[in-house]
Image: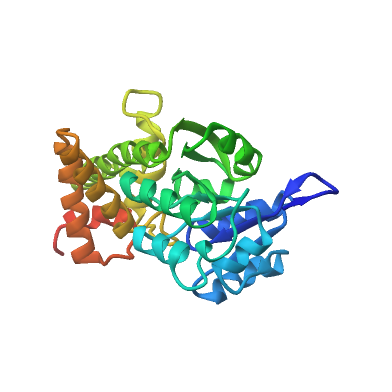
Length: 298
C-alpha cells in the first residue's frame, strides 16, 4: 500500500520490546504511517500517542501495510506470529514483504520464508540487527540482510530511518548467518571485557578509565567504550540486551558450527559463561551482568 501523496509505503511493526519500541519511534519520527501490534498491548501506548495505528492482530497489520517489520524473541515466537491464529499467513500477501529483525537459526528462516511464500505469496527478508538498545534509540544500528536484491532495495529507505549501516549479504538466511558471526565477536568481547574489568578492579585500578587509557590502541573498540563503564559502575538498567538473547544466539552458533564442521572454542566457552549468568542472575538480566559472576565475596 503506497500513499499516493508522498509515494511512501504503509508500514507495520510487530513486537515492541527493547528494540522494537525505539525502532518504531524512529519510523514515526520520519513521518511514516505505521500500524503496530504487540502481544502485550500496553507496550504500544507511547507509540499510539506518537501517531501509530493500533492493530488487533498480525493479520490486521497485513491489511494495513505493504511492508511489515518484526522483532521477536525467538523462532517459536516468529512461527506463532506468522502461522498462528490471526497470523500473517492468514490473508493475501502478494506484493507484500516481511522484514524479520529477529535472530533465529538460518535454516529456520529459510523454512519459514518458503512456507509463507507458498501460503499467501508474501516475500521475506531476514534482517537481524546489531547495536543494542542504544543503537535503536539513536538510529545507528547495523542491519544485515538476506533475500532478493530488489526487495532489499525496496525497504532500504525505511531501514535507514532506523539504522546507520544496511548491507545485503546474499539470499534468504544470509542475514542470519552474518548475525551469528556478529554474535561470536560480541559475545566473546563481553566475556573478555568482563575479565579485564574485574582484573582492573581487583588490582586497585580505576576500571572506569580503561576506555580512556586504551583509546586509539589495538584494544580500542565500541564494546570497550560502551561496556566497560557500565560494568564498572554497575549500570544494568535499562539493559543493553538480555542474557537469554545472547545465550540463544551463541547456542545457535555452536549448532551451526557442528553442521559446518567449524571449530568455535571461544564462542562455545562464552555460551557457557552466559549460561552461568542465566542461572545466577536470571534470563532477563542485562547481558553485561556476567561481570558480576566474578565478584569477590564481601
